[in-house]
Length: 109
Length: 116
Image 1 (cartoon, rainbow over the protein chains, first blue to last red):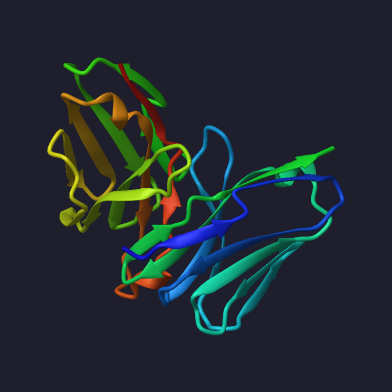
Image 2 (tube, each protein chain N blue to C red):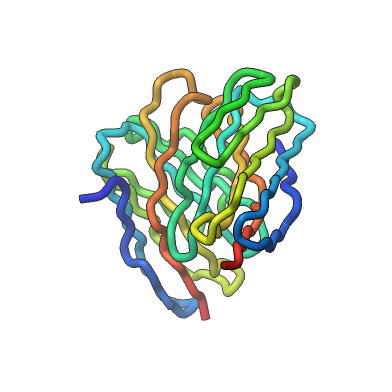
């Protein structure tokens, strides 16, 4: 089982601030996915990164895949209350996804 | 009907009960998954079905029994569960392309299971 560690576990910030969530592993993954999960719902895919060093932007969200494909980060600029949720990273190994335990982000209005 | 649906959304059962969780996907996918999500722990992959054949069984206790009658439906039959089995059970589906790492998994809303 490939283990992914996410940090921090909890993050509470004021609306308009920036935040970064990290995902680290000792394993090399074929790709890495970021999901957001809201209470009472299943995870929803935000992005998939495949190439080492890849950077993807989705409006105010910036995702980066490490050069060695062992780590990733999610940066949110000018966070809004609607960004509140559990952010999960998942590393793909063959057809399996190994998930991190998640970072709970709370954005206060 | 939205992508992946699960019923029931909430289930409370005693340790001697038998119940089933149902998952249905409307995305035309050919692979389906069961995951267990416990508080403060990573999602745990339980079972994978591809083209209605089970390809993964992650050392799951026999009190959990999956069934995949066709590519659109997946069941998880439960019997003689323990309180530590209380968790959110998530179903997902994907289109098995042969390039597993590129297959996006779409999740249902989950069934919140409580075992008394």
